[in-house]
Length: 401
Image (tube, rainbow, N blue to C red; front, side):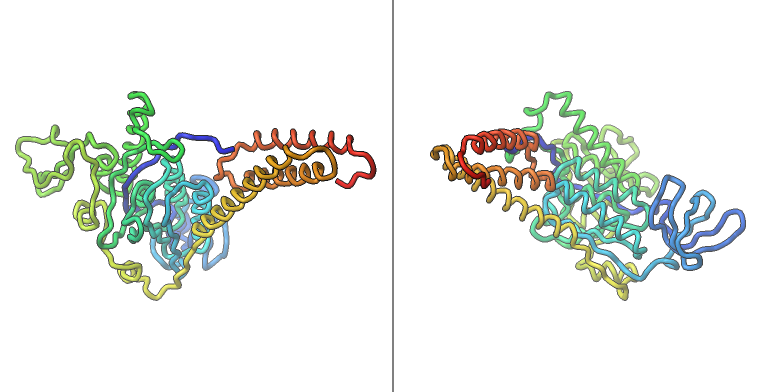
């Protein structure tokens, strides 16, 4: 009942800090000088927002009329932690991340901390999470590549890190190698074999540019981000007037001294935590969440752990197990029905088959990540319904079913 689909995945990457308009705690009216302290709980449009203030409570404001100063004066003394610690392959997890961000922003925390350890996932899902982080724009979001089962921010997890304002990495973690790959069913396919050259390059070019843009927005070396997604990019570091520059060898001037070759042509860039900090991709190597809190003067804050993403993943696994159980029972019932002649037993079996189809349809609609063709299920249910009604008419005596 599942459709085979081609899914484009990534493989490793990250990003960093940059203050965004609308994140602030002190608001000064440009016309009258009135000063308010608070935080934005939601953006209605690019300029209109809902502001929660100490002085006047909740109020609608036009952000263009206010001078915004980022500080902690009006924020609540809490930090909210959201964890990504699995493949980013479920729509329900993406939606849960978006909901968690919106929920966190309304609480006015000092910042949101994404703790990341993932082998990657779908490009479209990664971009949706990045967009949610960037567009939320109501409180700072920092990434902590914490390590664990997967050893870092790999693939989609790295892209999420790039969307965050700061990146902290645990010792031994890595970030990089973000080239898109293709998945057909459960099989990894050669990208160029699955797509013709022009389409494959369009996908690579779009993803490469997206990562570079994320890096540039947060004052990170965009060429290094591009090299994480494209093995054709070679990056060297040169020194010019005491300034570090990351360039391709073809752009090197005769008077520029090569300091380091970061990646050779033919290999994707992957960075250790120390390397990432050294080149400006990450902000610091830290041993724990506690060290991050200490660095940001947040050791005495209320720590709120939002595990809704993990709950969503567990709910999906329960739904998948239930789907398998009902499908197995249904297959057995259909086989048994084919061996039964007309009569009350046949009617009872048709009724059970009908109910199982209804359960599967309900489950499929509630859980799109099951990737089930609901229309085909409904067509099969209609066939069963027709058999059932016909069998009832043929059965003499009182109708029980």
